[in-house]
Length: 284
Ligand SMILES: [Zn+2]
Image (cartoon, rainbow, N blue to C red; front, side, top):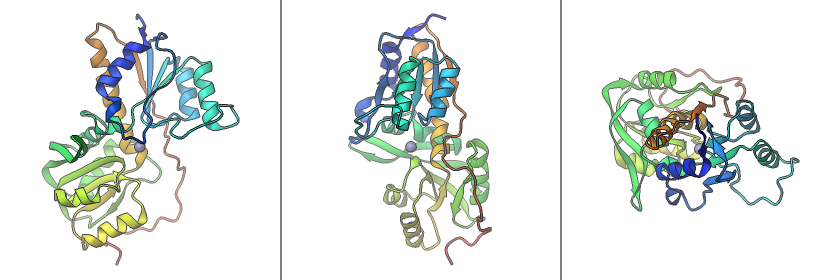
């Protein structure tokens, strides 16, 4: 296998996930590495944690592509006394380039939300909301209606497992067919979800107040809520990113070794005392 210069891999990534489509607060693109360094093995992960970087190092990766930024806020030190500093040091000492595609991958097509829509087995998928010409989230239909429980049971078979499982608000035996999705934290999109007429909204990181208020507004009806986990809903994108990158570079007559990280970077390790509630469909 002939290694590719990093600049060619970065150029392909920037065609797939244009940096100017990222949110203004975001920090995407190349974090470490030299554009002239050779790349022959690429790792894909949601989070650039120390364990993920170590896995990439042990596998001999030259490039780690993550969804979440390592450095989102200003830093004044990359000493190994902080985890961020230790991460930067490990990347540089081991000649591992780090590339981040975050909110630009969320809105890309195919991107994070398309991967989640596909996992939900949606057809006729379109943007949930278009802002400044950029489509955010996705909405589509199930080929045939399912009960809320059947739908989420299907979803659990295609998502990677996290300790928190999948939380659902709504009656388990209600039928659903229109599904809105936003990978990662999605509680900014409740107005768009309501306007879309979705029966169920699949997202993650739903906080108490926005979620409870959405259920109150729905008076126990639709849209039902599915909190499928931040890491799990975004992990689905890694396979898409890997295949899209290989496809983009295959046009140049090259190929790369790739690996999709399976380390669970969801931060939670166990759950105690969960209530067992079958089908109350609300807070009563
Ligand atoms: Zn995220």
